[in-house]
Structures are given as structure tokens and as C-alpha cells.
Amino acid sequence: MRDALRGDGPNPVPPSEAVAVMALLELGRRSAQEGRALHCGPDPLA
Image (cartoon, rainbow, N blue to C red; front, side, top):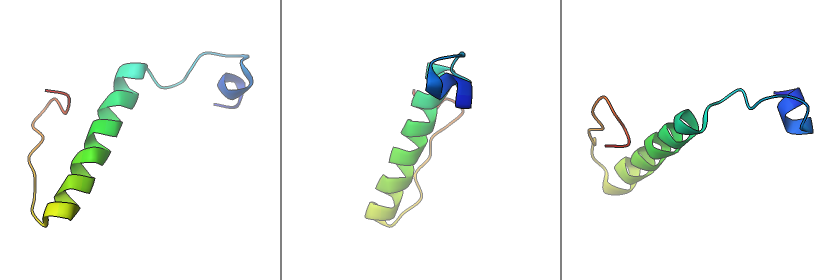
């Protein structure tokens, strides 16, 4: 991670995984806002 932040190494997290995590965080935010459980399924980007 340090090397990637310095521009000396590869990003340790593939962009597709970062987008999937952001989708799950958004789902969690919506769930809290709506006061109910929301289903994401096996592919959070679907």
C-alpha cells in the first residue's frame, strides 16, 4: 500500500473490487436511511 501511494508500486486493490466495496457501502447507507434490510445478491454491482 505504501509503495502504491508513493507511485512506486501497483495498486493492491483492483478497481473492480473497490467499486464493489463502494456499492456495498452505499447499500448499507440506504439500509440505515430506510430502516430496513436490503438484499445485494452475489454481485453487488448487478
